[in-house]
Structure formats: C-alpha cells, structure tokens
Length: 222
Image (tube, rainbow, N blue to C red; front, side, top):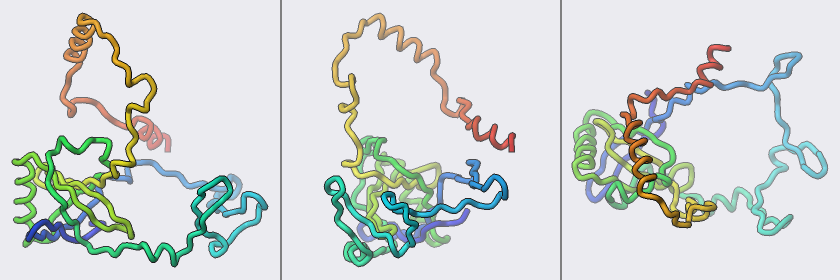
C-alpha cells in the first residue's frame, strides 16, 4: 500500500512520525472514458463564455464570488496567496474527547494512519491502545493543500483510523426536515410490535450481504 502523506502526530511533548494511506479502494469502481462514436477518440471539453459562446483559454478565466445576482468580486492568484496556509506536515492534536461526542454527520473521508518506520511503531501502538482503553478519540488540525482541515484519530484493530471531519457549521439541522419536529402520539402496542420486528431481524453486521451488484454487473458485461 502506497502512502499519500507523510508527517507527524503531535500532542504535548509527544511526536509520532506517521504515514497516511487511503482507506477506500477507488479501483473497485468501474470507470468509463467518453469517446467519439465514429473514431473512438477521447472527447475534449472546451470552456466557453455562456453568453457569447466564445471559447476561452485558461489565462482568459478568473474566479469570482457572486454577492448579488450578476455581481461578482473577482479574486486572482495573488489574493489566494495572501490567505494561503503553510503546510507544516504536523497533525496538531487539540484535545481528546469521548467518542460519543462527535456526531457521525461530521465524519467525512476515512484514512489509515501507520507508523513511519520501526522506531515509531511502539509509540504509535501505545497511542492506539490508550485510545482504545480510554474510549477517547483525538481531534486535531492539519494543513493540507493550503487549507486547514479538522481530523479525528480513533483506534482501529491494531492501528489508527483517521477521519477528515466536516466543520459543525457545514452540517444542516435535522429540524429543518419537514414533519420531523412534531411529537407523534405512539400507541404502546404499536411500539412493542415495532421492537419485536427489529429484534427478529437483528443480525451481525458482518453477516449481512452487502455488495455493489450494479458494479458487478458492469464488470460482467465488460
């Protein structure tokens, strides 16, 4: 498995050299290229002015933030450089919290974190086991691609699983979903029946047959 990032986990006076690996195997999904029907040549997309239809070069294009319909603040590369954060290659742990405090809507992309070399292996395993026994997770920050990201470290088997987290303000409130904020009167008998049905269908997650049948059918067709 090839590492996609190399750096350190740091908290208090402890520093652990680590490497980060993709936890998701994107190669499992079937991907298609768009081709011209007559020649099988790859299709090229052109960027065009939506009003004039004129084809544009990269240097003809700027980024803009729309603050009113049809009104934009133009931002160029020099502006982005001013707010660019320097990557330190360090995951700074801000603190350790109970795992139950981090709502699952905040979880984004999962990655595996592994020790960078044999020397780091013992300290790495010590952190993993301490997290497991305490029931805590580490929440920290790291600069990736010029932006600061919030990450969570949690024990996973004999290693550490790292999640990129969304910022809390990015997550909508379920109270905004229609018809979820009103208390419904539930009959005790109906609730008992529902619980009985759930009990009768309770399984171990590992026993459930979960597979991408569409992806499998695509592979068979190909």
